[in-house]
Amino acid sequence: MRLDDCHNFHDFRELARRRLPGPIFNYIDGAADDEVTYRHNTASFDRLDLMPKILRGAAEMDLSVEVMGQKLDLPFYLSPTALQRLFHRDGERAVGAAAETYGTMFGVSSLGTVSLEEMRRKHKNPQVYQFYFHKDRGLNSAMMQRAKEAGIDVMMLTVDTITGGNRERDKRTGFSIPFKLNAKGMAQFAIRPAWGINYLRSEKFSLPQLDEHVDMGGGTMSIGKYFTEMLDPTMTWDDVEKLREEWGGTFCLKGVIHPDDAVKAAEIGCEAVVLSNHGGRQLDGSRTPFDALEEVVDAAGDRLDVLMDSGVQRGTHILKALALGAKAVGVGRAYLFPLAAAGQPGVERMVGLLKDEIIRDMRLMGVEKVSDLTRDHLRARK
Image (tube, rainbow, N blue to C red):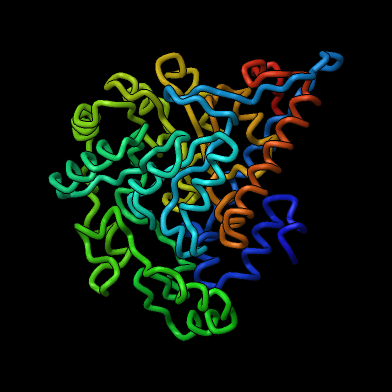
């Protein structure tokens, strides 16, 4: 199977499965507990049907949006995710370059594997910083100041990871950073030697946003321990409000589901919320972002930008979210699988295919601009 054989999410996933050691593939593919929410995230889009309007003469297609003060050429962006150079040696470098090629937004995580300064120097397209809230308030301030000095456009505080989710696939293989694989996990690395050769030939794996503060690579701190020991489960709205004031720029909360929380975010001055359940990787059984979208838009969409991620695999998924009132849609696994399978060419192929799907589907819907999509283009399936 080659990159040219990939035409959708499932093809990229299969190519990544063939090329990655099992523990790493399952880290990307896995979710919390019984993975019920993971499955529901994508299935939720099937509950609404698209209602095309014919003979509208859709010719010049405009896919651009403005979200959080940033202008994007596409109505979807590449959500910040952790550990990208573990999946492919180019990691965030490949993702940022692909995003810039298509004029859309990408993000760097606190658990990113390339420094946010390097990514900001290299790329002029909008860049967000996915920030985790630590028990050490001084560490929070230092990391935020660093992001300011780097010229980051948007601070995206993740609020659904105050403790790690129960990801049982990782427990079965022994996956952690640094690696502490069990026998089954090591055997799966042995049957994918190409990954290991590339990993050993690449620059040393690191987490540059945290290396000055936490020893993640020397055996004293695993990713699981990072979430359970360093992040602050007592974070409150008062903490968020202080953090937003300290940042002083565009501020977004990622991980909102309840409309009351979106209203509260607007009240304390946030410019946006991202409806997300972390791709099903945190609280299994939680409501899907797409199912929550209409309620949140109605409650707070006139006061802040509402975005969503989790479960997005198709252009039609993106159109349905936009029609419900989302300003833009984030994709995660949808670019991580092609990244893992083929680096920057893989990510660019995925983004290009999604763009083509959206253009084709907008024409079939009878709309020329993203802003033309409304709830009148949707009907609940009975």
